[in-house]
Length: 401
Image 1 (cartoon, rainbow, N blue to C red):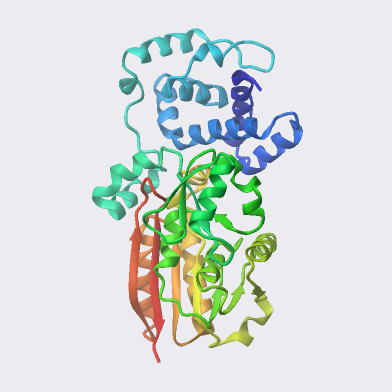
Image 2 (cartoon, rainbow, N blue to C red):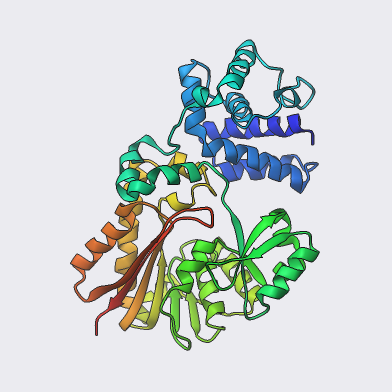
């Protein structure tokens, strides 16, 4: 596809997003209806859409100031100006491309060349209702976090020690034309520097030799006080990323259970486990009471705002509302109440979020401990979003004997 055709596709997708449609669904439907588009085309279109959404508030503030409509075209236009792209290659007026530049667009692009910073200004690309909470939670790290949330997230992988090692995977990546570098912050991590699109297409991935996983997500698991030959439950397992990392780090020596309300995600977890060479046992809702006081470790990687990972999923920050955040906070508390009785005495709950907000992290744990005197806080850790990975919080809670 030509550059202008890709931009036009992004415009259409953004128009659907702006009227409330789920972005992932829109992207999937577009790909289904446009089978001629190759994987590189789909990635390029997705990148335009995600880049726009990462700085959507910056772009819409300009449009509001200039009294221009907020739609897919206006956002892609400002995105193109913001990143100093060649507008004549994008707004061509050709078949499958956007119409040529309007009078306003020509004038704005001319003015922006003289002082692009003044045209766009500095805007914190988060929902207005969360600005004060972000500042309270991050303190001096606030401004840096805001700038990082405007950029693409780094890509990294976790090598599976049951099947391979760092050196072998680095060699394999090189042969496949993928540039990687051994991580300095985790044991089995590799930073992907070039050509990440092919990662899940190569045989080493299909054979379970590595998984795509954020370095900070790996760090959270690596720092947990875990022993082999124990029973571990991932209560909000999703597609199994955390429990898979735990099982591999323990060399498969233990009993690993998964639970989630999303059956589709659990099927993906089963496939990933089979690929990695580990075994999970499903813990069904109706059987939970049979497992009272059964587990040495329970991972509660709870649903959250996702604010520490918004650069990976920028639609999420524009969909969250005060009401949905309150629902998330309630769900987090409920999950802790659900898992506490499944734990053995002296067992551990690992409460994990990918949130930057204190109300989902330290303060929620403080409230839990006030209501549950038979638990104590052993450790808590904030890993701030940076150029290596996303933002995470983890609290290690021990059930008293």
